[in-house]
Length: 262
Ligand SMILES: Nc1ncnc2c1ncn2[C@@H]1O[C@H](COP(=O)(O)OP(=O)(O)O)[C@@H](O)[C@H]1O
Ligand SMILES: [Mg+2]
Image (cartoon, rainbow, N blue to C red; front, side, top):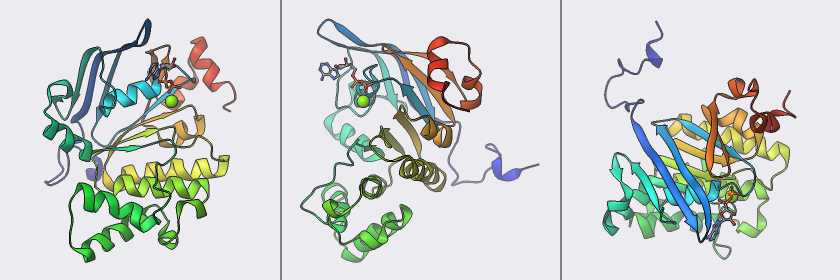
């Protein structure tokens, strides 16, 4: 009996791993005449990594922006931690944004600030921390988690693409989010650095028990980081499964993703 993996026998304060943290039902988003999201359904569980694979322009970023509240959906239901996002007050939305980290494509670092200052920013501005010793410790711990401690006093312009991603990821995890949403975390990186970032995403999930939606068209990232994969095409999810399971699919769109995978 593997007690370590049992969900039901864990003692508090272990988190309930069957809890649904994001529940999306029939989510729709239209721009003018164009229906970009045609009613998507997704359940993300506690400590689960879901990868959404899709070609360019199918609506992946629109979906993730609806989830973080940067775009307002036109229909359907979006619940985070059981609460409907559409009905939230500004105060509730603010709290939700702290629990939901978002790693933007470019890492979105402030160019004029050092890595340390970039990481202090959410601690002082969002969490309103004042104790410099605590701030220093959290900055160092977050950088250590992404293997970037030696770059603490560098400017983003002095970092490689992979290091900028790590710094962006450190800034995302520093507020202890329960959910992390990744939009194309490996795009623009060379294959080796992409793998490193994919393994880092996996390591962060295991270490912090975060739940993540990872949007990508990088098959290696999906293979490494996904507990479950959803394939998006033209505003809808058309297939779902494990990497191995989908690899055997006879669906033409799914096959196209796996054609170069051995
Ligand atoms: N703010 C917007 N206004 C109008 N159209 C948009 C907007 N954002 C995205 N779209 C359109 O929605 C479609 C899906 O875009 P997106 O979600 O960015 O695709 P991807 O899957 O590559 O991330 C595209 O046709 C895009 O032009
Ligand atoms: Mg996109």
